[in-house]
Image (cartoon, rainbow, N blue to C red; front, side, top):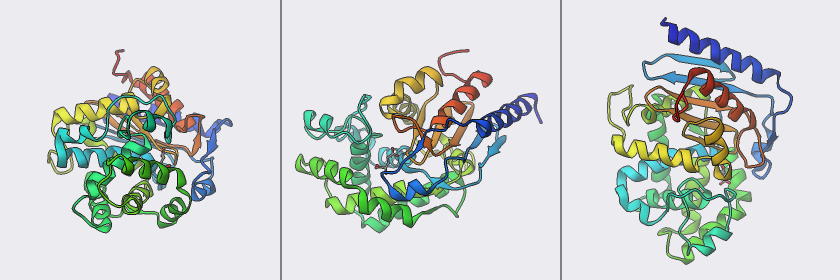
Amino acid sequence: MTKASAHLDTVVSDIADDMRARTERGDVATYIPELARVSPKHFGIAVITADGHVALGGDSDMPFSIQSVSKVFTLTLALGRYGDRLWRRVGREPSGSPFNSIVQLEREQGIPRNPFINAGAIAVTDMILSGHQPREALGEILSFMRFLADDPTISIDEAVAASEQRTGFRNAALANYMKSFGVLDNPVEMTLGVYFHQCAIAMSCKQLAMAGRFLAQSGRNPSTGLQVIQAERTRRINAVMLTCGHYDGSGEFAYRVGLPGKSGVGGGILAISPGEASIAVWSPGLDAAGNSHLGRIALETLSKRMDWSIFGA
Ligand code: GLU
């Protein structure tokens, strides 16, 4: 083992110990009833470096609901299919608003600010759905995750999908609102069905860090050597993650962690140290902006101790 790998192992194990001992853990999301059943006691971390070293800590093998982290992967798929035409439907500016805000959408004629707020992600999913049945579109998203993570066992938690389908009134409002502006091509129920299921994909930190490797390696999937997406687009996805990946907590995340990252209300965060590592953390308790409380603290420590901030040592 190299000195750098040994150092990373020590840092990851220190972080897991520190997070296990913390009592202030944030609040688990309750607006999707099924997510409220998850214990806030969990913490997991997985770091996979560009040279293939894997450092794991805590509950790194326990699957959780990836929720909005899925939006990074649907954006990648849609960019691959539509190229820059995608940006006609959705912007790429930070929103500064909560993840499910409808006010901004009204002011901006139904064009969502970015692909990572709910409205923007629903618009991206609608683009993936076009020309397909919902089942096929979902199959494409799931196969993509399995291919990236090199793991055919990744699946959808149907209970979480059904739970959100029953209670996702605000997302239905956002989708109907966009439909009224002609931003969605498909029937609202179909687009939402795919969106709720993509958010309900269950993955462990290890699987998620595996899936994110292409973002740390200029678009290449190291398992197959295949280019998932062009290097230039990879840089741009990372840029949108940095500026928009944590809703109205994006500035704070960039300030404290200094890495592109995308959070989900299941408590997961995928963070990328370009050229260095793909990182996934999970702790279900959230802060006021809906981002994992301990996940953010863990990433702040990791980035500091490994000197990984993209803003310099
Ligand atoms: N499925 C969730 C929703 O649309 C995702 C939100 C999130 O993870 O931030 O409300």
